[in-house]
Length: 417
Image 1 (tube, helix red, strand yellow):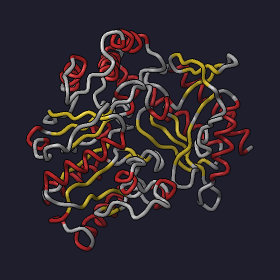
Image 2: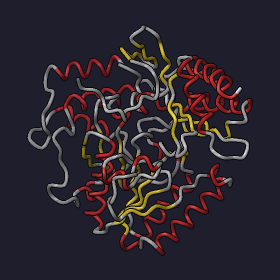
Image 3: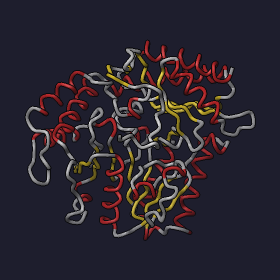
Image 4: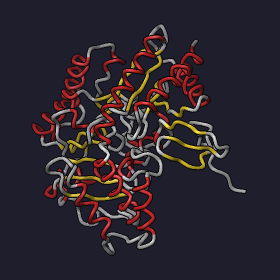
């Protein structure tokens, strides 16, 4: 008898039978408020009718049309539609299946385009689990331990984690940019540096937003040194942060943008976007793949984009994210074990720390478990597992946010008294 790998541990005890909107229903008929959204994937909610209809219609016409063998209409329509929302100048797209694949494609492009080998990432980063992406990931040792040697040519600079350092945001930004300059002077000379890769909000690293001044400082240095700025929008894209793209909370513009997760409402699809003049510097044969740009995934992505636009889900993310953040801070005010609440849009987190300021993973795990027992599904993150994150679908209502906050408050009380 075959079984799943014992390493595949569930974050919640739910055996899901169906999903509808912000809810999951288990095989016993119990309803759960899903504030995980499949790790930020189901931005339009579970089984949005328009996404379901688009996928069903496409399945009946063409499931797989390998896009370096034949072209298909869903892919062409999606390219046109994404052109409406991509930052100015990012007018060339390459489609893949997962965030990790897109990250690796962006590395390949950066190295080809610049003739340089080094990639600078930032402490707390998560860019994936495949071998190249894992080398870029510093959100925790579990993602990279025991598989070395990892891909060479990676340098790690500080991320402005103000709460961790005990500084103001401005102090943290000045430190991080100063240390980046020092890294370029001591470890990875600009002449050898192909790209800076950054998440607008650290994901697995603890849901820490990148201050606008930090992203703008990266852009200035990229321009000064001829380095590409790659923005990993795998989790922050498609309205998650209250802007269509997470980097749009700043004035920084990316040279390469990576998207996945919310792109297709749960169908496997990812992409990198870059200016055509940059994309054409990739070497022949370096872009391709059997399943990238799958016809059904593209049809679902096109429907997803239209739902996001027609239902103002980006605006709703901003509004409900503010409501959620305010509510989380009120819960934290009653429970000193929650040392920090932070986030952008519907990407919010509570960090648990002890009286000595050290991470309190046990309290976070107890609160996470108590929430699941009450019907609120959440996830943890952070290097120490002491951050509980909330990532509801972007269709969430004020009433559902308030319901979640009530359940969260009770769960924290259960966990810490």
